[in-house]
Length: 393
Image 1: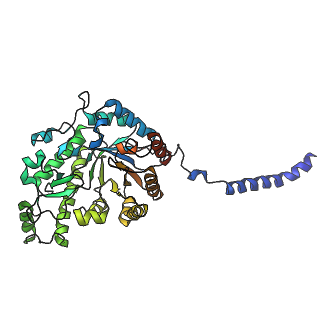
Image 2: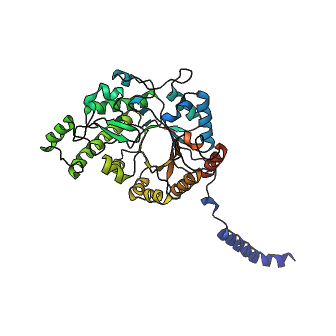
Image 3: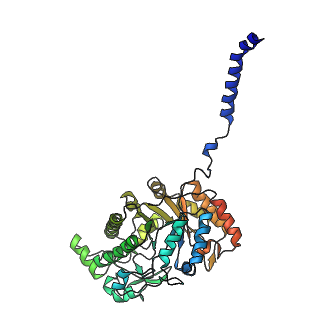
């Protein structure tokens, strides 16, 4: 009997081997599915604006907000620190220029930026302060009134334009004193606070109509032996001004890296064609020059087809191959709420393309929304089902 069984051992072994082989071939590819043990790495951020000050001033509200964002698998906060010509933290740099801090004390007299950083880091959230206004300042701000020689102008001598923030003046990005002031503010934040980076948006630019101030005209004449063209859209004139802004951004990046080498130098512009042609902001060159560590392109569109057309632009795909890249998505405004259905469809479109997302802005995520808070939060939880931890510097 034993001899008979031994004769079948090779056959049984072959059957066993074939069974395992076939089972493996038809088994689902579980390793390709996201799991909590292998978190997806992507930007999941939210801008914290001046509209969110009621939250920022209260330590308990900050704790609730950061805890909730962590539970919903967000990973990055972008709190505003430069808005309307004012800083939002105690700043000796600004005070030396006659500019008082707009707001920096919380309900118990604390530094709201320092508190936000501490509480966010406890929840493994990165904090990248956001210089929202860039070279832009209201004409009635102390900055504009105290330093009129820092402002640039249009060909007709006017010094303001109309923006989403209302009527604004523009600091001359080519003026060395303006460059030093902005650089000093940025370095103050980077060195004074335990930040993970610094961010500049679509206002780190200049509307193409500007640049006809006395200083810039003289600089252009000295470098080119010509006066600036009367046509603000003249290609060479546009390129000259754009290149000057790029040169400043390179210097600013180098200054930040000298103080904190691993700081994330983040930029959140409009889509490229708009950014360059209307605001001389050549951010694609910044990416190619390795000035930018992280890119978030603002695409505030209600129609999904328009939204997807913008995020399919080749410059976004090129940037995505170089650095972490995300899309800025409108979560709602106080007078214009956005439905969760629209947010979901846009986030999913970005995720399908391997892009991260950042929402404008915190309060509109679920507090000022057309759906109940619990419903909105559940929807975000479904969008970000697994953690995506970003390592701190």
